[in-house]
Length: 276
Image (cartoon, rainbow, N blue to C red; front, side):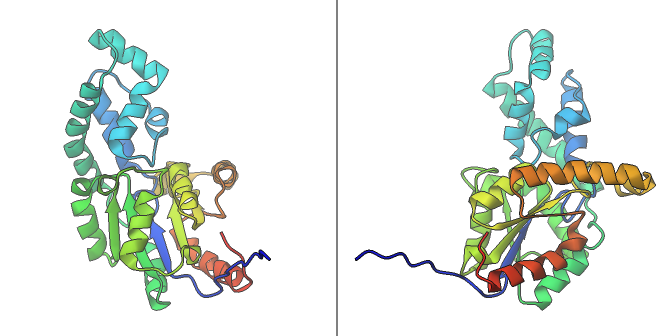
């Protein structure tokens, strides 16, 4: 007689995989926006911050490709250059983008408030930490070094160029977890400030945590956010949180500083036999 056996993991959280910009560094995820706007400005087709944020979270060559596919940008490019953008154009733009992005990242590489404390909390509990990013490895060398100087040292760092497919595919997160040698995917958490990053975590079978305020969805520097009236903060927070909830995030928090309470809640749910 056939029977169904369901296996439950009831232990503690084993690993957390963080995005970088907007999640642990670069409050507001400004560096990518600075980079894309400068790139397109130099090529005669200025884009808005809203347009630049549209594909956020994807690998950066793919991000350029998606920007050029937007009807307004595609039309402006075609009118200026006399033909629609080609794969060769995307390749050229990507190569031009790399040094622009490296410079922009360097200007905004500081840790988000609470990131160091959350990292220390995880390490003290024996929870492994990984990081992944839509940036390429050559874009993040300085970023990784500065973060280490400030006390944030993930044990696994994966860039979009290290895997066959970037977000929303789960490849980066799964590579992180292989390198971290975790035992059970249900014991792992993905934290990200973009919707493709949440998709990545869900596709990998993890608990997912959306970052509503410090990252891409609100997209404001810390001082500008703090200067807003409380009612406006509440409105923007709720808009961002709703987008994450619709994307399937298990939790939504303002910033990485709020993660410890989420970890403790996930461990209670795991102990009760829940799965992501």
